[in-house]
Amino acid sequence: MDLVPSYHVNFENKRLHLLLKQNSFFIFGLIANIFAFFYITLPYIPLPKLTVWTLIIIIITISRFIISNKSLQRLNSIKNLKALKNIEYYYALGALCSGCMWTISSFFMLPHGDLSHHALYGFLLAGMVAAATTGYAVSPITFICSIVPIALPFIFRMIYEGTPLHYLMSVMVAVFMIFSIAIFKTIHRFSLDSLNFGLNTQHELQRLTEKQSELAYTARMATLGELSTNIAHEINNPLAVLKMGINIIQQKINSDFINKPEIQDLCQRLENNILRISETIIVLKAFSVDNKGINFEEIELYKLTKECLDLAKSKFKYHNIDIHLVNPEKEILVYCYPIQIRQVMINLINNAYDALLESHKEKKWIKIQFNENKESTQITITDSGSGIPKDIQNNIFHPFFTTKPGSMGTGLGLAMVSGIIQKHHGRIWVNNNSPNTEFVIEIPKLMPKEISLKKIS
Image 1 (cartoon, helix red, strand yellow):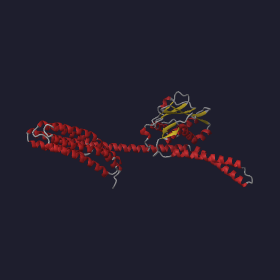
Image 2 (cartoon, rainbow, N blue to C red):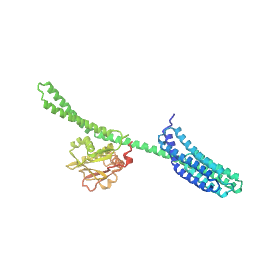
Image 3 (cartoon, one colour):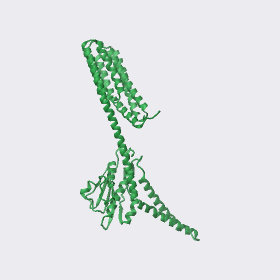
Image 4 (cartoon, rainbow, N blue to C red):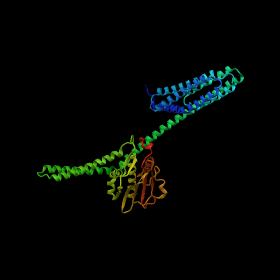
């Protein structure tokens, strides 16, 4: 079978979803009408005959309900337009069967010449037509199959009665039908326009989400670019030690005397440097991986923060900036999207670094510590700066706002940090009670179920 473009499949899927979701309301209304008709005609129709009619139409109605619910459950798995159309046709067939049972009631069960009972039946009919006009607004074929079998036979029956009042009633029903069809056309067009608008909006939101994901990935790569010197240092230094160690081992091999404990100690130091390179590469890989298909997961904050600091520690050491990463008394776990939390930590650490480079204080330091309670975890990043002026604190988390001179800042770092924290249902703020520059991040320990189960795209 040929598959149509996904947009048309999505459109038909949404349209049928709206149609089938109305089914429960229609079933309830239809059963109410069945019992109303039963009550109206009970004095004139033999009870066995009326009971058989009632049971048949209730069986049809319940069958429609069951089939529609099963179709609704498997709707999202259907990707073929023809199969989706078939579901609509089957649903319309069910409406036609129900209408035919009302046809039987019009011709064979209404008492002859009783205008009052005919009028009551007409009100029941008008209610069903009005309900179908709005409820079946997305499906013209279902609308036609539901109203024609109940309205036309009633009109013919009123004409058959032959009295002026019955003629008038048939004209009124016919006019009501014409108005209902006109109203249906308007509602149908509006419903389809709304569906199109909703799908287009969904498409745009998906496109913006993809762009946002690409922007976040680009920002991470830009951050890695800024850290490239430090990363090279973290890899080159161990490589230099490895090279020197290999030279020493070769010299020992070429000499007549080999000190086994000394060689073992040297091999251990070489292995430690290999592990150092390996850890750096692991952190780089974790930081640079794309966003797509990654789940929220539980991570240990201290370990994650230490990995971020390992990428930047050489530049802090070069500029005599002390780093104090406070190891909590117990392991602090948080449910988060690790790549994004790494980006938050590196952005805030880099911001502190840039600010301290311009500081004239003799002692420069950055302190990172963690606190937790039953519901949330707090990350506090403090540096030896003198704080952020209150008049700009409301702007620092806005896109493109920067206090860095020239082209040094893009104004996107803190805006992206704020967006990531909000996505984690957390918050970030500047602590004005601290004598230094201090950012506080608060993240809930347990994410809402619908967020934790959702894949980030």
